[in-house]
Image 1 (cartoon, rainbow, N blue to C red):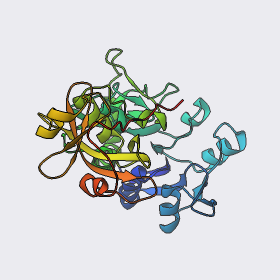
Image 2: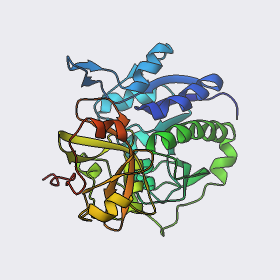
Image 3: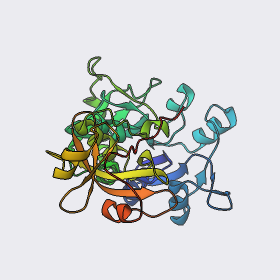
Length: 324
């Protein structure tokens, strides 16, 4: 298929690579994003990442608060677009908008649908211990990520990957898969596949309480939990000097000798240090080696550096209370 007229919709950094690639081969009529948000010390309104990037590219950028407004819908129709491409936009597209473009609306979604429909597929896949994930390009319909799939591409999730690593890999994969799909759109639409009704899971939006560390869980589950929320918002617990974000950890076969002799063995207690000085924590079924932390108000640091600055004895409880 030749050069198309495309309205692009997205908001976070994840949506930037696909816009860059599509802009090389097609006519981007406009970019729609979520409205600016207050951030920084002065809490000034700042455009979302995709809006800033698109403005730097010299593209028209709009950020309506809703797409249900008839004036907004008339504005979208006036572009006479062949296609709307949607990547992590954050606003629902009502049926009246889905019907506007000539070939429909394509969505690049960061999971292998129907697994992990919804807002946070990257984090939920890691948290669940999935061994792989990927990108699905689907033709959008009124349901939440329920449309027929035009193309998929998968990637393994290794034990070394946190959410930031997987985000960056999938953002690039999403860009190439969307560009390839648009290039062969007629064939992709012809061979679209309805999603299976089996294996459906939902990736709920991340909240601050989701990232709280429950030390009662197993070391294996907690290692996945910590990777899922790193680098942002950061899995966390309460420590001797306020909240601690745990940014890297892995399961360890056994506790250090001093921890075996002296620790209370209660989940959430400090269990000594390993040979490299990393912090060992008791979990529901053994020890977890914590290697990178960020104390409240400070930068991320190796856990051995953190331990040098606090008075923490083996058996001291680190978890504190769960938020209400």
